[in-house]
Image (cartoon, rainbow over all chains, first blue to last red; front, side, top):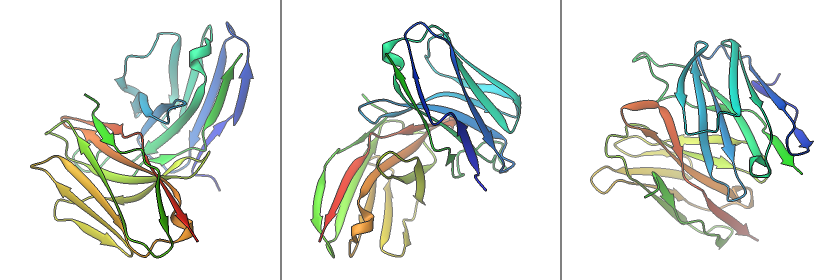
Length: 118
Length: 111
């Protein structure tokens, strides 16, 4: 019974294509995230949603568009893929604490989507 | 300057050894600190939160030094299964929903 699931696990595609990665969490958490882990292993936040609202939007090309149809889902659509987009993309979720933030709480990560752009 | 910096290692230690990692962070307003563990080609998983007074969980001890803005992780009696990359994670101060990850410290425990 997977807590945070992502599909697909592997994605190999040509430059210029458009692709989507889906994420679902069954933990009842309010906050979801997308991270990118590049070849140097840096895990960098891209977006964060809280109850379907965007709360963090890092300096990410606008070819990347997150969508949260409900608080259990956060999908990532990428237009016009480039070679530099090749990375592992992790979805994560956490629960808000009583102060209204998620800062003290564990983030649960999905298994990752390994994207290779040829 | 990176928000979170760690020595990438690798730290190669024999079973049973004690090993310590440090991590420094740049935002003095950060309030939440964690150590995550990431196995090769897997997702990060929480190892332990780091509390102001320091905390221990079995063989693992975490310390926070706010004045010097660093966090440490001590592993005693290393096991082969401790081999992994250890990620230091700090939240973004007043932007408390934003988390910064270090690039990780790789630990290899050898028989």
